[in-house]
Length: 252
Image (cartoon, rainbow, N blue to C red):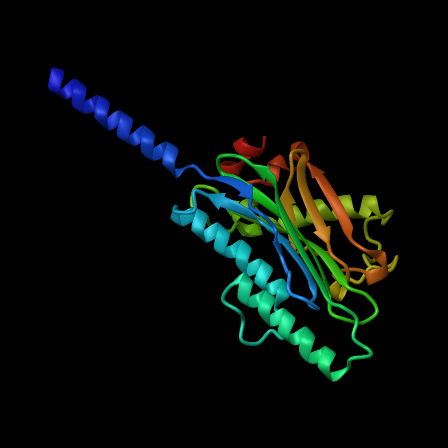
């Protein structure tokens, strides 16, 4: 009996250690900056899932890195394999343009900042603010959300989070119309919005914070650059009927 008790205790300690080891947390490491002479100004500050040895943490970190690379990828050809390579290529493209037009080139700039906007045992939302300037009248700033299942490291889509995305879309449209003084039945673009085919749709950027769900339309998505971002905030109490039960108890 004593042997079984000792063996059982060892198993309990083993499983407890495994459970503890599998949890991930997030921390921002030292920001990455572009320090070369006469180069574009680049600053990157990303949260990192830890411990980095866990496969699910590695998956999350890889997606975060890919996001940063996509912002810096000026030519959209020969996609760099790392942030360091992306910075080097961004520098190279800038210098090529400066050599060709030394009197007309304005210094380029890239800034990418990420932080956890909401986190619990099942889901984490990471908000990514980015700004890129490569000449022209102005740069382009945008906000993106990356949502992950903290148990697997999988990036979550709208279909993963919401019970019925179509019903959620209809619900959000009612909030959008009220927020912008658009009565039901009135053309969604009647006040200057630019929804494709005059049909309301959810933005590409959807995430969580402590109060509920944030939806952000970035410039050019449904309005002009001058109009800036269009934001919708849905309190969690109103959003609960549309969220899958698997996530509901963690955002309740």
